[in-house]
Image (tube, rainbow, N blue to C red; front, top):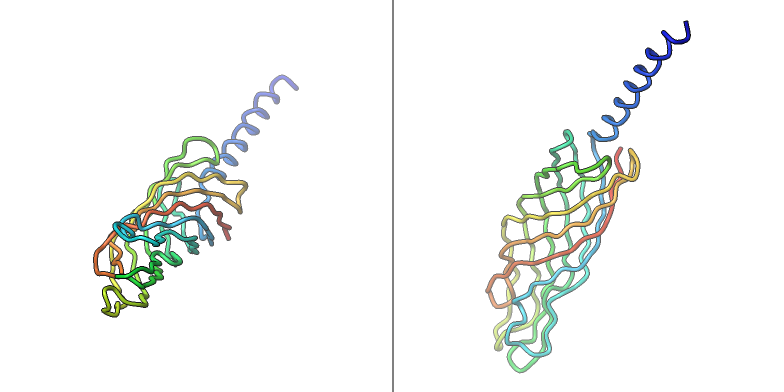
Length: 192
């Protein structure tokens, strides 16, 4: 009697384990995230002495994961001070931030571990102060694409950690030229 029930019990246990693994691999729903890192506009300081074009960046987002392979996020990014220079020709400073919307494609590579790519749009707001060759600099606003790649690890069904490299395209500098902002982030998110 026990020999007949044991295979049935094993199949039920395997089915339950498979359902639990599928649930862990498919954490659909909303999440809140917070990330911090380093942002840099690499060309802003070309040919300018006493210049800094990198700062600490933070971003916050609300996202929704639809299934194992697709998600979306709305967020806010502060790049900090992307340009700060003072010499004979330039005495200016720039702070920048962006509102973002993006789609995220995920590729599960192991249980609880994903590689992901992102593509979206960012609404930039650049606050400039100071002068370039005696001419006051102006604030700028624009909407441009941005993208990124990263990895994430689900600690459990509620918490995840991730790291990501992002490129925000064509942000205007204090002199009107444009440059991409490259940023590295490390952070996490909470699912609810």
